[in-house]
Amino acid sequence: MTDNEQKKLGKTLWAIADQLRGAMNADDFRDYMLAFLFLRYLSDNYEQAAKKELGRDYPNPDTVGNGGRSSLSVWYEQNPSDVVAFEKQMRLKAHYVIRPEHLWASIAHMARTQDSELLNTLQAGFKYIENESFQSTFSGLFSEINLGSELGKTYADRNAKLCTIITKIAQGLAEFSTDSDTLGDAYEYLIGQFAAGSGKKAGEFYTPQRISDILSEIVTLDSQEPKTGKRKHLASVMDFACGSGSLLLNVRKRMGSHGIGKIFGQEKNITTYNLARMNMLLHGVKDTEFEIYHGDTLENDWDMLREINPAKKPYFDAVVANPPFSYRWNPNEALGEDVRFKNYGLAPKSAADFAFLLHGFHYLKDDGVMAIILPHGVLFRGGAEAKIRRKLLDDGHIDTVIGLPANLFYSTGIPVCILVLKKCKKPDDVLFINASEHFERGKRQNYLSDDQIAKIIDTYQQRPEEIERYARRVGMDEIEANDFNLNISRYVSTAKEEVAIDLAATHKEMVEIEEQIRESTAKHNAFLKELGLAPLPTPK
Image (cartoon, rainbow, N blue to C red; front, side, top):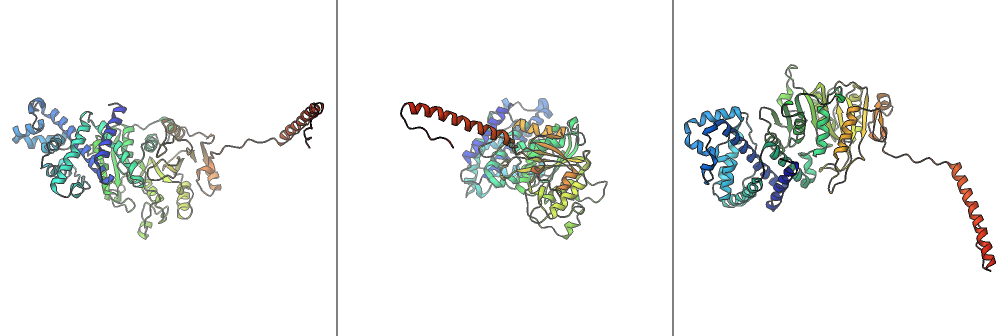
């Protein structure tokens, strides 16, 4: 499917969402739309796998009839004694099972025919997918999909509303291919559109694609020699504030479907956590290839990360993150002794930015790369943050500071920066890239063009001594002289130098002009005198 067709599908689905939402909260309707898109993908993918598995035994769709039954439902009816063995095999091949009555084709048919049992069937289908479809449990995957009062006061009202929504979505999808890339892109498009309408809340689940492109490209380049290009394989990648998972998926897209051993993510918000799990599956990531945990990153309540045995403790090749900016938290004495923070100190209550950074950095491999989006305050704020910043600089862990333009995010209009950190880096300096004035203006948000992104990445890769008004490598002596303040404009100013004025030459030129005026006035007055007219006043 072409880019235009993918955009057309996304716009088609968004138009349906805009048309059907009515008085419903945008975030709630987002969950409906994305859940049904997810079910459509799972169903189509499963039916294709079933057709391949059954071969000639798979009933011909043309002979099934128009009763709303799928080929798979006919096979189930004809082969009841083989169902258990078939489903066991499908768990190995497709990694999941969906019962025929829960397939999208069946659900869409029930919606078209206004079947009174649609709501009950859909609820049963969601429950089956959460608890029984996959080898690994996806408990609560649809927990935020409220099939109750949001849709109407009575069961009949809710069922009728659901029939309308699903029928419209089915019609919108009918003319498009539904492979993982296509529906995955449509899913991302819808998340972006809902984010645009969610304002500040969008920061909870969405990193603009263009910003995501920068982070994902940086962490997939060779950590020691970025000039040599992309790494061939990443054993693991981690996003500890993964939102809907789009940043992790961007890294996977850049590395290829077999370029990453396993994807790890953590998300505190339950709705967003479910979006991330759906997003992974919808992009063709098998349930064995990713692990998303629902929990509090700062409290570090994920047992996997609390492993005491050094041999079993997880470390990641790449860490990416867009955590909530200047998040208020409540550090206590116990956290002060936490292995993540002990050597650096605790971030202040007013801003957990460095707490997030240190969490991710702690789990970075020695030859790994971390790229994190943070507000500019981390570069220059004093107090506890200044001590953390100095320690990171003294230990040689801050590799690159990238300043981005303002108004790139849905959640905030402030300019932000990307910090690139490494545990073992070759250069003994820090590369500053000031891209704050390189952007395109949009209706709601500014955005970065392909060329502007390429310039940032190329500068990071080549690490030049200096690019006027854009980038510069700065030694630790200069940074120390600036009291470890990393304010980008101190090192790379975008201000244009005023043209130097030669006062002596300017004075000479003005004297010559004054002399010309006197001569011209004298000539003019001579003509006026011949004509008997009053002369012009003589210049002083």
